[in-house]
Image (cartoon, rainbow, N blue to C red; front, side):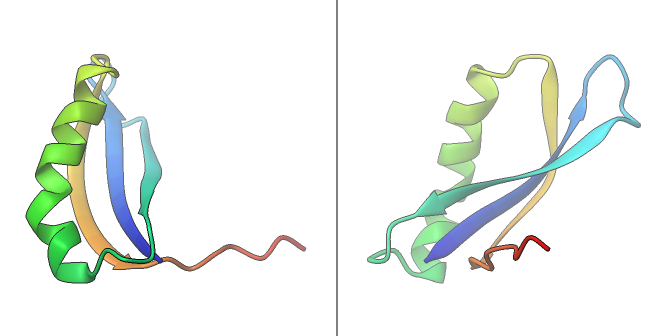
Length: 67
């Protein structure tokens, strides 16, 4: 599974940032994620006007193992 990983920061407080991700289905490869990532982030940003995307990348999804 491919993950669109991105970091957002509050517009009112740019030092308050959070890691986020959107998952693509198994059929989507890294190149497709890179091509469509900006479109996905623009749509996400429209619904989160108080936050600003600082950086983003595409990568293989790595599920976190909780202890």
